[in-house]
Image 1 (cartoon, rainbow, N blue to C red):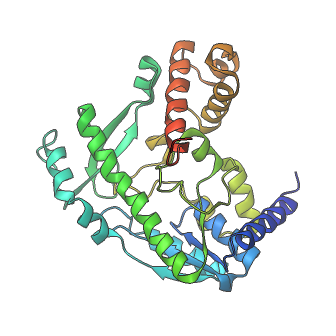
Image 2 (image 1 turned 180 degrees about the vertical axis):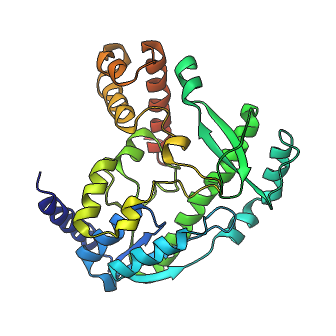
Length: 316
């Protein structure tokens, strides 16, 4: 494939979509990661950097101290406008973090939010055995590695996840407020692996006027990054969720199976139905997994995607 041609085609598409929406430019939530940096550079090339705003929305409770450096580098390299709006107070107004701290202390009385942090991680070993995506809360020193895993009740785990999902939805509310003020389109940075496997928050990071890389796999995003001249430091940075104040990769958080395998499995199940899937290639790609476990994973993913893709149902 000619990556330069593909990038130019993508810029043409972005320009056409923004014009069709009668918008003057684009707002991009910039996290300092590879996806948002690629989208920012695409929009700058498509629309002109003077018509693009990089919106940085840090959360003091979880955003890492190193993030601002990557954000500054991406915005400066793309030449766009830059706006910072901290979201910590908005999240606290919705639900005090003390409630989550109290919940965690039921399982780890030593937990001190001044010293410690938590994260929700996938547990691949349990997923293999049980045939469903399993999550646990881990704790450790702030911005350090997980040191202890907590076995929470389902209800308490859901409460932690629901609190964290406020962050993505709060960021989207901030993005739309700035976009409407400027008459810009909100251009989202979720990639195809995320959107097609449910690794997004409904009405959060999946909500945008345009999903500029919503069809691209992660390797393809990296190819776009190199062609667009995204700073090498950002390309080399391991992808993170920017959700928790504990070290965590996207694989830790969501991908109990490789993202490309999950994406193909979900698409296969969606197109042909679970009864007609040939699981042989998936079993070869996923040592240690059984067909019933993979079938159950696909069932759960389809249910998640149905929920995420459903928008404001109304009677016919």
